[in-house]
Amino acid sequence: MRQAFGPFDERNPTERDNTMPILERTSPSIGRRIAAYLLDYFLLSVVLISLQGVIFLVGQGFPYNLLHTGPQIELWVVLSISLPVWLYFALGECSSHKATPGKRLFRLQVTNLRGARIGFGRAIIRTVIKLIPWELTHLTLMLPVPLWWDSSPGLRSGILIVYVLIGIYILTMFLNKRRQSVHDLIAQTIVVDTRKQEKAR
Image (cartoon, rainbow, N blue to C red; front, side, top):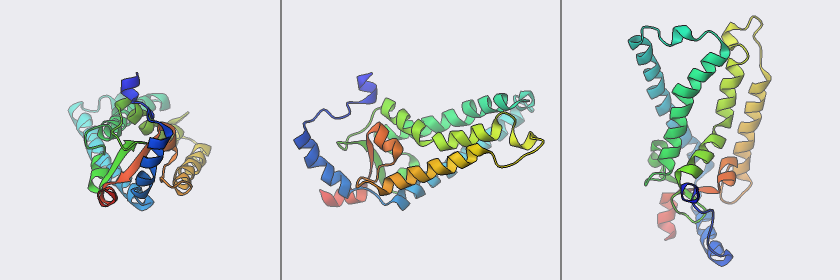
């Protein structure tokens, strides 16, 4: 378990204090972080939507013709969309690149508070927390009845919660020097701009 998550910080306070000012100076702009996320979102959308189309054509409608309720559709979304997305972010950020393709393009990396590579356990925790608004959107649209099947569709309260959460996630980055969002604070990670990191050395 300890190896999977990686030690949170084994060094003494003096060593941490010497490292953190450097990491704070290499924090990327919030705009670059959002742009990297949107690029990853675009890449995932192209791949996963195309995959859904292939499954539909090859299966001649299967398994979509078996999805008749909100819970059934939500389960399919979790297995065929959410799970691949979680793995995309977690595996990318715990890899030797310390980044997803979107982050790599914008020269960003995810590290622990010492600037080191994170383990898969920490990466998956970070990813799941980061994507809570996204998952809540799916749940709100699908349950108890899919919005497009609802006899009296309207604004569902879950969507308002999603917008509030997104606002909190973004606002949190403005409230600390390391530009950490909620998922970074909980997973004890930091996003660094490798361009600034090279200059700081």
